[in-house]
Length: 583
Image (cartoon, rainbow, N blue to C red; front, side, top):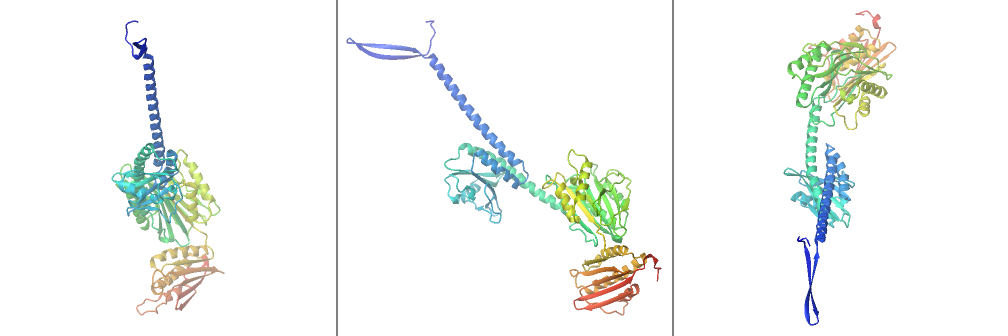
């Protein structure tokens, strides 16, 4: 009516009426219908876009769930155990397994939602089964109604649809993931997309985890090579140590310890912590350990040893390098403990009755901080039956916690522990270190000085170098039974001569030990030494006169040769300090 145009629908009908043919035209305005059609199409497009967005969001969420499970763990085993349940959850799957490649090109089921037998691993050869074909072609594969030969993992045998995707890391196949759903369900393209995206990220995570594990093993091997291969045998003393590398570090740490037998039967204990990680810290540990042993064996007193170590660090280290260290010298014969502390945590002495005391000392700076610091030595009596404990900060320090709380926790745990140093170290690590390992390296060293009785027994390799440890124990025992200095010197000389003869003439090799025992009763001591050979007769060249010396120093000496070995029994009555020199 207003002259404007509008969309119309025209219907023409042919009508016959009274012999005439008429045409009826019907014109309908379809503007409203066209508008409704447009609105309907727009609504359908919006719904399709919304469904696609929700589907993609579901895929992204599922991918994020899988990645969180994979990336939350640094080790492959932990990663797989966390990944598979999440994988089944996201894909609404019934079973899943991960196969990792072997050196021969086959694939072994490394993790599964089902049970695995470690002694009988499940393997898929290259090109055989879903995993073998995926590993060979590097392409995903979907198998509906799979045969049992298609999957090696029994957890997937009853699945109606199995999807396998490769884990590609660069040019290599890092593994294969298999997922199965129960019949009659079938995997969709969306499932393939999600698993493919997840596989790309998981493959990279596995590659990084394997690199980490390899570097961690190398670092741990290097760290342990810087520690004593075995602790020395200390007759009459018990010593034990533990070292735990940090769980989250692939680099070598700076914690180290050492046990050094010193002249006179004394023992040096060392615990140090070099700042930093990596090869620089390892190099510093190696230099410090070698230098300290050299200075100690040269006979320097503890303050001099630590001062010389400080000069070494100060002259060779960078400005940022330093080390804390505590050097302890135990004299079992005198029952004393001496120590010098260079910025390290204080040693702990645990008495036989369970009383624990920290060996505090004047504050001293760590090694390498100042060119000429003053290091002082502290000495105090060591109770009979006490244990001296050295440790690093990984055992006691916790983020956000006062150090005094950690030290109190250590004292309480050490006082409650029972048994020798081995059980003490094991108990402290179990109680104070988080499961697996902590965030820092942990080193623990314990030496126990058990009380001596009226008798002792000792087995030693037939080596001259081991006589020093025998003399140390014998000196300590003679002190315990009341021998004077003169008697101690004479009995040591006689016993040393008997032991030297046994090593030279008796045992055929160091693997065949000699045995020495002592017993005190009624003011008299008896020392018995046994070997596995027979002594030679005295020789004209002046050698072989050990028996003459032994009989001059002891009240009675009896030599009993036999085919299986020789036994030397020596007796001496003790008069203590009342005995005059030379009588």
